Length: 330
Image 1 (cartoon, helix red, strand yellow):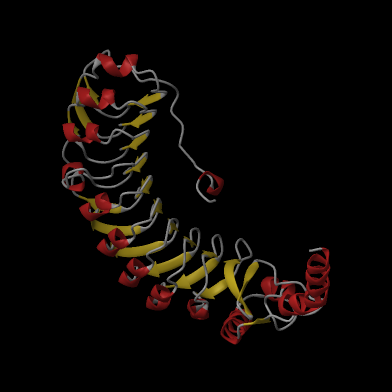
Image 2: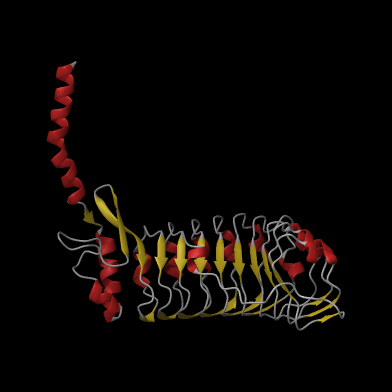
């Protein structure tokens, strides 16, 4: 038995250099090397300065390029994450990115990218996080974005996207966070988004959207886990439907600066963890039910700029809710 153990130990020692060589000698997939070098050629000097060598995953004594994460798959290394943000990249969205077919995270936020998102974005089938906020991107969102079935986080805020919010976003079963605020979207918010069983945060504020909340929540059992709903600074009309209270996980409801009217339904006060309710600058009337003032979680109820009866009081001190990337990215 002792001889067997010794033989196994010697065999492992003999094989170890071979195993190490496999890891060390793993080459970066040519497809990814080509794509990253094309991107390198199109980007500004700040990125190029930090990207040394020809292999984005590192070569010999050279480390991987800044913002590039690779992993080994079989005999090759592939690029799985590309994070190049806040470095003043100027120019159109780098289409070569869509050749990095193993990407799980693409973060190009806070740059100066222009033009549309190319339809080839639909090729990135493994993508989980897409962050393009704070750029100068425009045109419509391509329907091919609905082909990113593994997407969990989509950040397109603070751009100049136009047209309607694509219904194809409802084809993303794992989507948890959808940020579309501060663009130029028109039309109605697709009710199909309510079928997203994992959606926790929906922000379509500061656009040119029309329609009613009743239309948005018309699908039975919609938005089952939604916590934060931002509809502020649009052109929504109609009232707050009593059915909205069925969204029992709501914590933030932001309706400020629309053209909504009617009374505030008492049932809304029975949403267990409702924390922020912003109703200001609409055309609401009547009274605020007493139940809101007894709610154990409600920190802010902002009502300025409506036609409520005299004596209706706000709760808390109003402030603009700003959530950082770290609240959502994992």
